[in-house]
Amino acid sequence: MPAIHSGSRTRALCGARTFRRAFEPLRTGPARRCEAALGLLLVVLLSACTGAPSVGVLGAYFPDWLFCIVGGAVLTALVHVLAYRTGYGGWLTPPALVYPALTVLFSIVLWAIGFNL
Image (tube, rainbow, N blue to C red):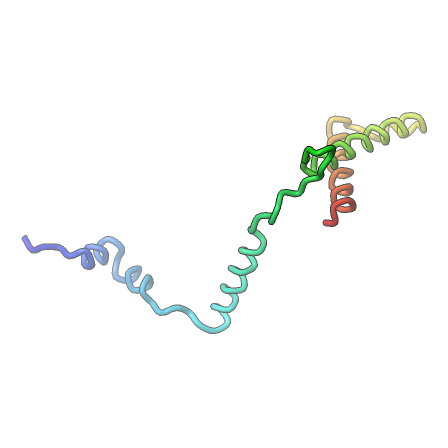
């Protein structure tokens, strides 16, 4: 039985067409520039922060999003109180969806304003 070399085995397993495609020369022109630009964009967008976004309070560092969530919850409670005192509390239904959505909305707005989105 003749020895099977790794190259012929690869061609037999993958097929000649796939084998040729794997060793084609690199693309050039607009398609390659588009791939390069997309790759650069992904690297920039997926890179991590240079430092942890934190705020120092009495020597301890807390993440900035923590303050935004607390502020969002306080603003949501304020909206709840004002809505029921003015008679618009019935508009905030269903509360299981409205209040978490308001908390998220206020938290994101506070983060964008306070920490320069």
